Every structure is written in C-alpha cells, then in structure tokens.
Image (tube, rainbow, N blue to C red):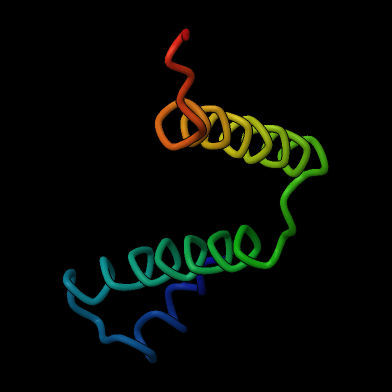
Length: 77
C-alpha cells in the first residue's frame, strides 16, 4: 500500500526523486512478502509424489546399471 503524498514527503522528501522512492519501496516490499510466502509454503502433495517416483526410477536405473556392469558375468559356456 502506498503512503499518502504528505507521508511520502515526510518519509522520503519533497523532490521528484523522493516521490519515485515510495512506489519503488512498495514494490520491493511486496516482492519480499511474496517470496517469503513461497518459501514458507510446503510443496504440494502431488509434487512430493512426483519427487518420490523420480527417486524410485533413479534408484531402479542405478541398480540395473550396477548389475549390468558389475554383476556376475556369464561367459556362455
């Protein structure tokens, strides 16, 4: 929320550059609040499920690769 013109003059000063500081400060404060909300909000359940499934696929792939390169070799005899 932007302060009144009198409040802007009292907080920043009466010149044009000071008038620009008020909306700039309000924009920065709004962005900071939005970022804080995003950081504090836990991930959605669907994101957790997707992350779990991706982890499980990566684990299975690592197991297959490990078995194919490092497991017992069959010579076909």
